[in-house]
Structure formats: structure tokens, C-alpha cells
Amino acid sequence: MRPDPTVFVRHGRVKPLLYRHPWLFAGSIERVEGEPSEGDVVDVRAPDGRFLARGFFSPRSALRVRLFAFEPSIEPDEAWLRSRIDAAAAYRRDRLAAWLAWGGSAGVQIALLVATITLAVARP
Image (cartoon, rainbow, N blue to C red; front, side):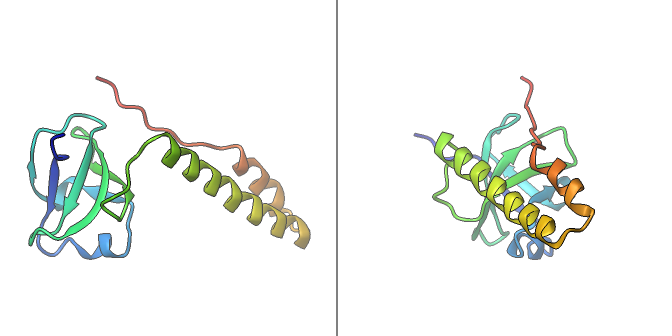
């Protein structure tokens, strides 16, 4: 099994990733090792080689890498996707219950968010 391609972040652009920002912009990239295609998993590293995150590569977007993990062992498989969807649904459900218990009109807006899913699909 070959290693995942690696994206190296420019000096001075590491801090947002340490705070778990979910995107890596094209202008923050120093270099890319390997030849990742649209949607490929890449490791993201600091200029000194230290692991920072893993994400999906998007060569034609200003948001060049969309991060999904900040630990090197996470694989974006079916179990991972299911756990992320379940966690997001539980988060929304908890917030909806709090708003409805409070009785605020914003509860209606939150109820609509419960059914919203954002999906990015890579084209070959």
C-alpha cells in the first residue's frame, strides 16, 4: 500500500489548523508530494514535517483541502461516515430540544436544519 499524497503548509499558515480549521486554502500550501486527484485523501503536514490533519484534495478549488481528521489513523470509510452523520444528527437534535423547551420562535428554523445535509461530490 502506497502512502497517501502529502500537502505541506507554508510557514506562518499552520496556526488555523492547530485550532482545527476545516479548510486549507490554496494560498496556504507550500508544496504537494505525490499526485493526488480530485477527492483523494491527503495528509497535511507542517513545514517541518509534523502531521497536522487529513483531508480530501480538490485541485481546482480555492479550498484545496477539506479536512476531516486531526489524527493520522482516521480512515474515511463507511463506519467513519456513519459515525459523523450520527454525531451531527445528535448535535442538531440536542439543540432543537433546547430551543423547543425554551419556546423560542427560532425552534422552527432549527427544525429545518435537522434535515439538511451538505455533500460535495468529486467529478472525474
